[in-house]
Length: 116
Image (tube, helix red, strand yellow):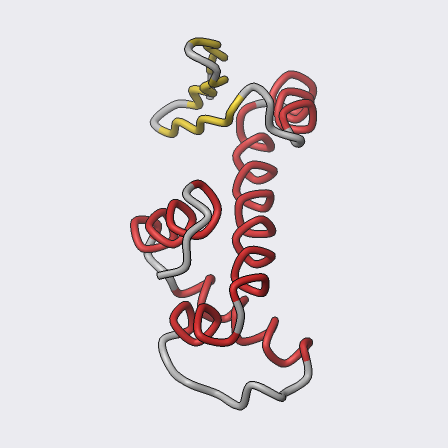
């Protein structure tokens, strides 16, 4: 799978076959993304990008509190449960979530920084 990186208007856009990922050029993980793309190839880059986005969203959900966490998993649960149990709930929901739904949550909580 070939690809290219295009930098324009404050964003680095990584083209990997049919997939495209963009990241602001001032993003803290830009070096990690470029390194994965250049050194490990586009396939590894996509894994790194997706994992980075998931970690960012998970952090933003925790920052937004129980309501955001419940919204993401699709049901209410005990707000006092152990963080590891909540994290497992999030991981399970993430693994079953269609990419377009994930993109909506990512945009809402990470890009815009707003609670739903």
